[in-house]
Amino acid sequence: MFSMSIFASVIEAAATCATLGIIFLFAARRCRVAWLVYLFGVIILLSGIVLFFLGVGRLDQIVNWFAARSDAGLRSAYVVDVIIGALLIFAGSRRR
Image 1: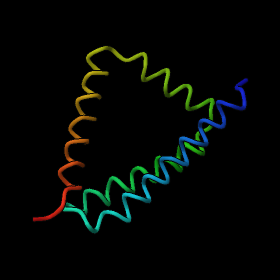
Image 2: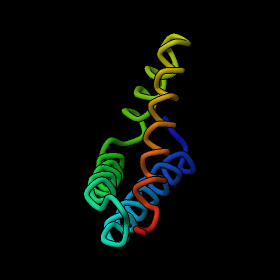
Image 3: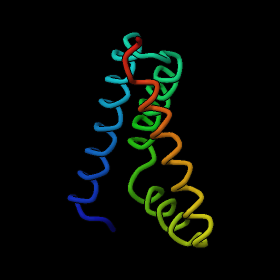
Image 4: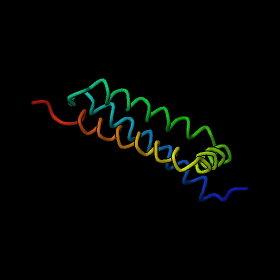
């Protein structure tokens, strides 16, 4: 099966996601585009909760599925990640 260190890593990732989601929720009201930061905070918080309940076996299947995608599919996912990052940088900047 899976070793305890892999299980601990999944728990750590879930806790990190949940913590980051909570930080986004608390920081959102001070941002330029607060609703966007709230939205990502909720999504990140829920992903941490779901990650905890998925377990190691199902998470391994998801990672293997994603890794088996074509290069174009992976590159398009990375482009979406960069766009989301740019939106969060803009939304997180201070109001003038």
